[in-house]
Length: 417
Image (cartoon, rainbow, N blue to C red):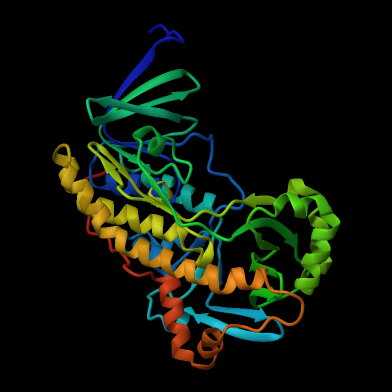
């Protein structure tokens, strides 16, 4: 067959087209494939390797893996564990959460590079012949039939594609092309900070501090075995000012805040080693159009507070599969079916964002705008530190979530070997 001319679009048909191969898209693709739904997942990159993406896997997500019978293999993927979240607030050391007190089956937070998480789902999904993951394939817009979304326009190395689908699901992140193409209105909640991500090498140090806060400075440190993954929090809009001071000034500020980083801070050689995360907290008023559903960051961008973004996205995917998979396997789903996903997931999303905003405004903003002198931790955090069972409540909110989802979507048998 002759290759398609550049001006032609190659037609593809499927039951469901998922745009975006992040945690929401890959989990939903896996669940739909498991349920016997013909599904295509589009991922615009050639692989999943992107640094400084969310890589905290919470007990709620590990429970989903258990529901799917994947947990034993999943826990063989290299990861680090964290049970107790502790911080230095000025000169005061406080424990703010204890995941071992949540009652979760897997009572810890696992730190696993997101590309390993996504590759795991892709590898396990190979047994479903009706699941197709198209890498190097970028969605460029939607195909409409009147007011109904009937597919996606995309491009790959071979040219343009027209992918016709009964259902399109936008999982393409906080800068979603699909959301923009659908004209969905977004409500901005706002955040007072941005984050500088970087790695600092370890030379045998150990450090149990999850967060360090001084007047005007704040940083989260994640122990990744051979290096520290660091999130240096700055006031929103201050990046250019901080960058103008030079990389040496940033390194000095980091070491002053966290002395254990002194031996490895030279790894931050230039601004090329620093990634700016522009923090956004927002949400769609409506997650759907006829034939279209948005979930994950495409429906609601979460603050990095609590590191819950990956897990909220996974919960969205599980809920969507629970509600839609069986119906989609038989035919197209209705507008009310799609709206049911939003009804299921909107309350936990809003509650989580509300708590993140409280932390942002009462701890993060207060710390970053504090003047000179010792930083005094808020009374509530001192109470949590003093009452161990409260540490279980804070941990449950972070690690399990407001409404954890369990897999109830069907599994179509048999599957290919």
